[in-house]
Image (cartoon, rainbow, N blue to C red; front, top):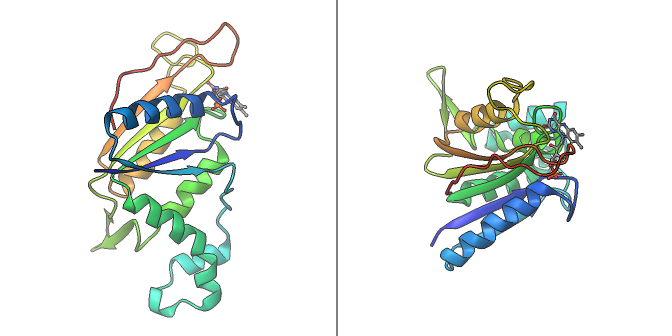
Length: 196
Ligand SMILES: Cc1cc2nc3c(=O)[nH]c(=O)nc-3n(C[C@H](O)[C@H](O)[C@H](O)COP(=O)(O)O)c2cc1C
């Protein structure tokens, strides 16, 4: 039995392609792995705040020195971190916005990449603490990025996601990209087969 975290950031509801694709994936997965437990987080329902100066100060304060105000500031981040660390496998659906990720998902990452929780520093070296889990990103994008297309090399989404999660110790990172959606001309998918 595995625990799976499924996160949907798209600000769109039923019309969201990334949500639809991730739902199909999760439903198919659940059919094959009936004992797996899915934890679902919809960032439309629980908006993620941007980090602030006080939040940053709190996040770099040793646990024993935290004031009640600091503890309160970190409460939602702790909830997200606990949820993320508890999962064996994570499925994140991610729309492409301006060649990268939507700001709410960036805010999510900023709350989850936490010193002392998901990474630490030893002898000046960063050490990820989120080891042993598999992460799958199901992306939905308007244009094509293959060699020879006008947007070849413009994909800042996959590198941004890969680096942030590698930094906190995730070594098994996979992508299913659905390109060519919602920019006219119908839906063309460049999806690759994948597993979480
Ligand atoms: C604000 C905004 C910015 C977008 N920027 C890009 C982009 O840079 N490149 C791209 O290929 N598609 C872009 N798109 C198209 C979306 O990636 C596409 O519609 C995707 O399906 C959105 O995901 P969703 O349907 O899950 O909301 C953009 C869409 C919006 C609304």
